[in-house]
Length: 524
Image 1 (cartoon, rainbow, N blue to C red):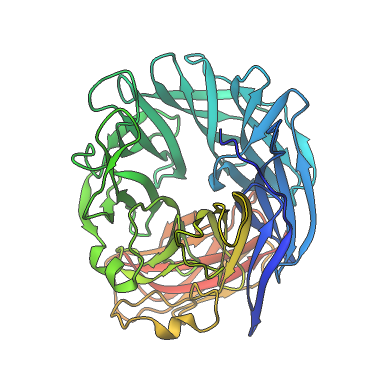
Image 2: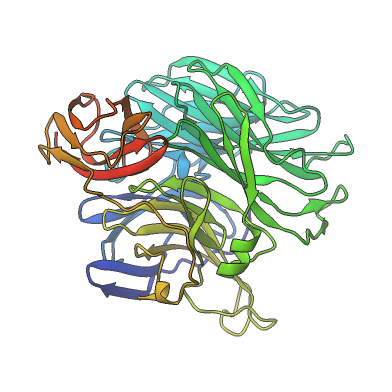
């Protein structure tokens, strides 16, 4: 637990508006801004806050912003006077229909850690249930990292637990009332600490579960000698089917901060950072002269199809760093992916070719001996207008600008090119990578909006061997997939009656390549 003096600041720093594509950067009331929800007329920002010295009481804060970044209101939630509440990352927040579930870690006055869960109304202003708490039977305490609410009656939780020797990982399925359906436990050996990162629905109805393993290479009593990224594939009941470490076991450098997304060709694209190596049992690093970001395409059975790094692209886009903390990978409505790392964003296609990259510094500071500062990006979501909104933490050490050490949550809204300043993409280097173009005319949908079913008409530039239609929500997750006849035609799609109202995107995929994208609106 960090223990720092926290200054509560509500400050609108910059607001930019141009051509209906809003851009803004603001400080928010919470200690760390972690996740965001978009509504028709506003955003809700989820934050993990603390009262500061001397009590350091943690609570969950939600702040509502209008579409221009102005703060509308803020509300705070704490379990009770004997418990502190924390949220770990953006994937702790999960939505199904109007049901918002947040995975939390609860700390008691006795310093016992328990996994917990809050149920909110749609705009996070009211907690409707806080009763579910959990400690793994194998452990003494449990820390909640991830919550995945994919089905109407099943909630998947990813947490870890301490057994007195190592910290292992647990995947838990419950119903919406908190009753246990199944539990699976995962370990990585003696003196190895597992931290779950993300849970994704697998193509076959199972789950893809990513971790960072903090391993002790000397097999001594202290963990954190080096870090290893792993992927665990389970079936629909959480039974492990395979486990891989796409970057190896961390020799000679770490392979950490793994992110992953399913791809439209039925495989999985993962990325990890090849960062630094701890050379002894205390926090001392040897620098990796070749620090970079790696990608691999993984098949459903865990085979690595290909592997590449983006060292040349990093140099081309001037985003070099000594530590790439990869926070999240999301699929955009047009089929491309966005990767959020500690200080920037990278847009790629489904073959991990860089479309553009941005190192983000919305305050325009330059670190110096007189004033050191940092950004720590925590969560990213695509927005209705084609841009992205990012949450995170800003910190500044005592210096010429900030008189004392200061931490503040922030929210950063960028346009469709990842620009905070209008037109930043006009100075981009010339590259040959083309991104998928949204709403290609090969595909049409009616009725649109719809209240139940849709009919699609599709045209093909040439006859493919395989043709697939997939429907994605705004988070990029496929909610429906089906094969299509490999000739032009018209098909009626019966939408799942449990599918929530909102905006969706149909992808027409021929031989693994997206050849058409159209959006539609579902009204309930």
